[in-house]
Image (cartoon, rainbow, N blue to C red; front, side, top):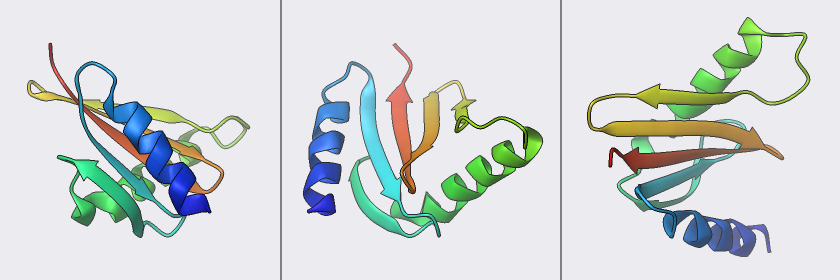
Length: 92
């Protein structure tokens, strides 16, 4: 059941302008789904980056949103309900 909702969410995210990949991981960094250019091998690193962001602001109750930018595009990271979502976007 959860897999279908993740797939539906990924399909919806992929329709946004500039999005060319989505990776979803569980709390341990294991990839549960991926579409587009998102590399399955980066699941652990995505989860680790969000863990570090939480450590930087331990008193904040909201989940952090991390954006990693380069000349080629950006990677947005957010965790929700134990699932980390990485959204790859190209620069317009």
